[in-house]
Image 1 (spheres, rainbow, N blue to C red):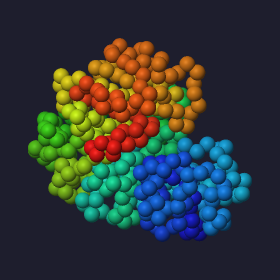
Image 2 (cartoon, rainbow, N blue to C red):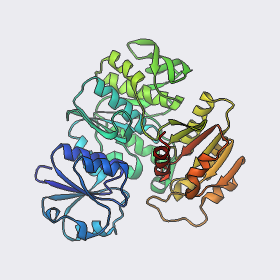
Image 3 (cartoon, rainbow, N blue to C red):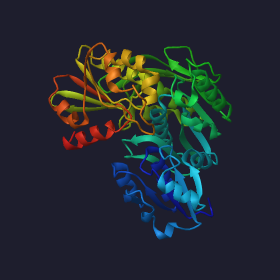
Image 4 (cartoon, rainbow, N blue to C red):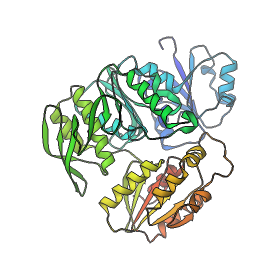
Length: 441
């Protein structure tokens, strides 16, 4: 990295790329990037000093970035025939995939990696909050915008690092963390892994890369330090009671027990994420009193169980894009609002995921009082014939409709539901973000 003075990031506005851009700017490197659209994230990067082009043309590459001092970093969303990437390849630039660059960066620190098919971002954000309050020297790369920091990257030094260990395309196997956590291993990314056993094998390989403490959800068969709710484990939460703004719980470690701890999250799945973060922090040497206080002061992450009030309707915004995650959101809302009429607006993410889990999606979505489906968000994929939202809708056995994005706002404005859950990992996030800003929620 010492010889490189400038970096060009393709897909710089992505949640993973943007944290790397911020790290590089803190290190005083020059950063230029391409992306398709201006967003709140790209505006944040520009305010911090990045130069960004939204026209994907080689004519927009600054002349100062046409040199051997430039390294190109590209995200998984950029395919190999992308015109800008093709230009850099044909002209002999040093080119690195995001996952490899991030792995090289954090492997040179005392790194803490959060793995799992669900819960990575929330667990990483809570651990970041605990490390910050313990005044550790660390940098954190989080897959969501932390509300208290208004960013997905936090720098408080460079001795330690927190990183999400992404199982997509086996990226996490590049990591050699000091400590790690595995929250879950549900079937996903079958376009990459083909079978669930192959996915589990990859998690097992990841676990063997961990040098120190390995924290494992109690339901998983991988050996490690176990955590869970209302089970006998090394780290336990028991007797949890829902309050208006979180839970009161009893929390136990191998050495101590804490009574009546306030945890500022909603949903038992998020309590598990909070417990996982606490366990990692405890084994990292954090002061337990500061860590317990941190559980009660955590402000959350954008698009992770965020609540808004609009015209007597409660809007819940969440990134859920897998049947297990939708189930967790539904159960959390039913726990908090028993008897309420709950509508879900869901945008399926990826044709392959919709195809692989169509029946599971239908089962979980059918639990809501009303379902409105948007078109599938393709992301990196091309259309799979016969796989669409109408087919999924035909399998849902409650009141259901197709919702066009043009009617997204009016659907909320004219709804008679008590609660509207807005779910998905695609551009539905931009739609709800614009609605929230429009209505000053």
